[in-house]
Image (cartoon, rainbow, N blue to C red; front, side):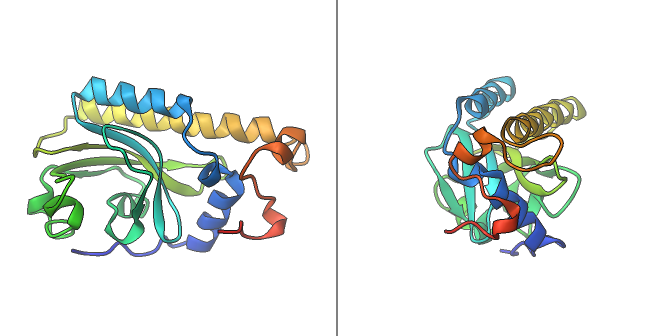
Length: 193
C-alpha cells in the first residue's frame, strides 16, 4: 500500500477546514440528499462526501456504508486531495497504491473508486465527493461530468454556509457564525480536538 503524501499547503488546508466548522457539524440532510442521489444515479453501493483531517477521514455524508471516520493513512480520499483532477481507479486490486489496502482486501472490499476533490470558498481542498463499488468497473466521460457537477454542488453548499455565518464586508463571524457549533475564528488558531 502506498501512503498518500501531505498536501503542499497542508497547514493552511487544515486551518481552513477547522475554521469552516464542518468537522464538528455532524451529518446534514443537504449532503445526505446528494450522496443518496449519486448512489441511485450511478447504481453503485456507496457514495460519500469526506473531509480529510490531520489523522482521520471524516465522513460528512455516506450512502451505503455506516461509517463516521476512517484512518487517513488508509483512505483513498487522502490521495484525491493531492491533485486537481479526479482520481479514478477502475480496479483497486490492480493499482499499486491500493492493492493491499485494508479497505480493499477486507470489509468493505472496495474494488472501484472515483473521487472528485472539493474545496472551501477560500480555495483550500478539504475533501472529496466519492463513489465506490465492490466490483471493478469503467467510468465514462459522461459519468465524470455528473460527478464534477455533484462536487460543485457540495462546494456551493460550503459557500452558502460560509455566507450565512460571516459578514460579507469584514469576513468576521456574524451572530450565526458565533452560534454555529464547530466554527472557529481563524485568528484563534486551531480548533481543539
